[in-house]
Image (tube, rainbow, N blue to C red; front, side):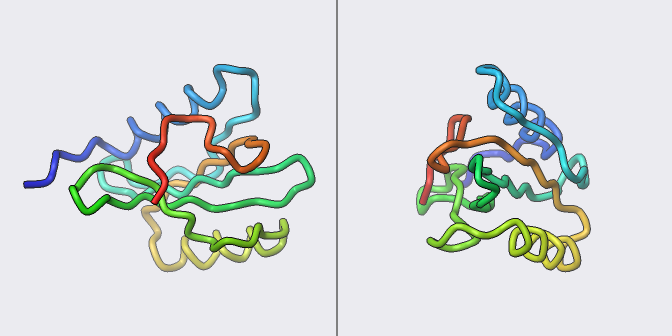
Length: 112
């Protein structure tokens, strides 16, 4: 049995709050469905390059994050196009943008 899922708005607010604790930039770019929207997190380097994380589950059913944009960081233009494609595919999606030197998530995250 998989653990119950938290509402998307609660998860998004928690990520933004946790990411902003050390004074880094953390902002909501797109608000999705409060109950069931999935969440994309854009991890931004100072040079504008980015990595996009997407929600997923581990084999055990625990919440985790996947490097959805691939191994190579995206340019600002590529990031914009990626987010645009994802929002066309899923209009309920949330998009968060976080300052993240070294592309390390500034919130508690299991990466798979």
